[in-house]
Image (cartoon, rainbow, N blue to C red; front, side, top):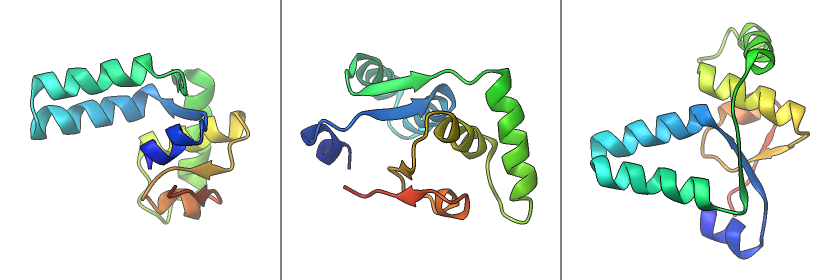
Length: 109
């Protein structure tokens, strides 16, 4: 998916919380160096904007969690929904169907 987005020069947005989850996953599955390498790559990408979650995103995420209280939605995903709303992003590059539950489309490349 990332290669397809890069080939099409599609600008991507993520949050520092998603990076934290990705780093943790790589740290425990692949080790310190691959986890650090991934962070370096994310930060160096001209096509990726990293949004650092703040108080407004937190408040909006809490609204999302309340709205979707009958679903198992993570706080990280709820913050992503808030960022997507604030940046007018309609689609997510994800395999996570929580985004569809929140009304966003999924993009697979």
